[in-house]
Length: 153
Length: 153
Image (tube, rainbow over all chains, first blue to last red; front, side, top):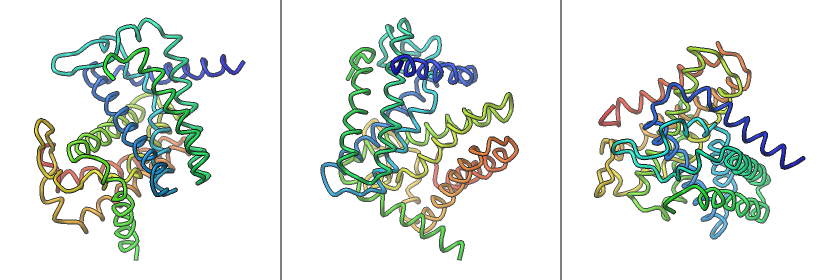
């Protein structure tokens, strides 16, 4: 049941996202998705730095909210037709297999969204140990998708 | 008093951000700030598309939360020393004047953060007319900074 709920969430995210994809050119979809993941990566790095060094609860909360906002932003809209390979100078590290495995992508996407929302909730508590666990879980969901569908890591 | 409060918010944002800047190389600061603004721009575009066409309250809420998360993420940390001009292949469209006008930048940054938070609150109501007004105000705060401190628009 939980697995079904997560898969449904992922598919719902993709469907929700599909509305907005029509207006965005394929090369801009690639550019925007890279921006989204890069922005998330910066915020993951900030949380790691806080866990490794002096813990600033406000900074961690803002960073976790940013990651959750990325996860909830409907990234599926940025993987539209024609975005499976480079377009002119706009490169991509996505594997074409991503576009042939909708159910798996929906599952991984749902896992990321759930983990990111859990991380934001953990950050809101201000407790570093709680954040550390949730941060690790979120990192696993990033890696799970990269391992399957990202060509360069 | 309001002006003071906004300026203080901006400065607090910059100070908060300063903690995290030490770990990020200047060229990565430029890359991450471009990613942050690009991600915000995509989400602004989604809200505009919703206001122009069929209004999807959930999509607008997610997009507005994303813009607010960018505004609250401590972007000041990404304008550290050495990021006032291109570094190798990493270009930037920032004007060097930004680095010599801390008080003005803090004011503009505070205006953006306030407008983005107001936009997220407006989106939470689900009312398109309320969102339209808040969206316009947010766009003005983007433009105000671009007009002064962005070389290419």
